[in-house]
Image (cartoon, rainbow over all chains, first blue to last red; front, side, top):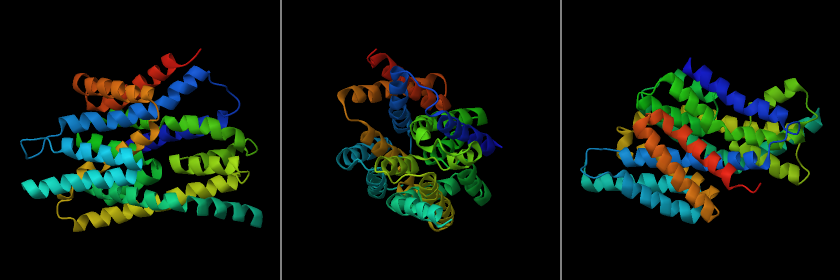
Length: 99
Length: 226
């Protein structure tokens, strides 16, 4: 049921825009605001979960993993590489520290 | 109609470089989905019904945090809202298609199919068939990878040991950094992060994505030239 509703709202972001495209003209300011949205979304997907993460260790291992992933993201600009680097860093730290 | 068939194939072919990335990303989704105790039917039906990677990862994370269905649906809407912009810019190119055809094509609108198709239109190679091919080039691997990841998860004794709980955060970092090309946008990312953290603590974890999205949008509007 939740999936159907998720599918419906996702379709709502797909069809109406495609259909309206060319018919309705957004103001340049609103267009600019909408184009900034992904940045806010991605930032919100990253920062709070990293800050609140608690594992079996005294230290939050997501913090060093995030630092590694951010560095790789900065160099490569590729989600695949930053994902692999962060995962590898976290797995490495867990292997080193146990648990 | 051979002409249509060849444009679909062209779109499919040009999307292959992305298909590989989609497959890798979808495999992680399948693994995390099983780690989050979703069934095979749930894992696949979410991929078919929603078919939007980032929002499916968000949903898994929110389910894990015990968020309400409403919060998950709202977060899905906000995470996918950027696609309205894609539609608005791709729409004029697909003007010739009827409403029914457009309704079908709309399902295949994703980050990757949009990007590939816009480049094709700029080079004079775009068409509705091409967009359909690009959409299939994303949907096929996404569904196959969801299935693959789900079965792969059975062989990973403890997915957390492999650091996979960090996978989507790491992937989002790549997306975030690829979008930031000015100091203003660094500021937008920092401000959105702060507001998202505030919303997480004061409103609940399900609201942080909406809060970050609206903060960035607002900053875009107020920083724009009149």
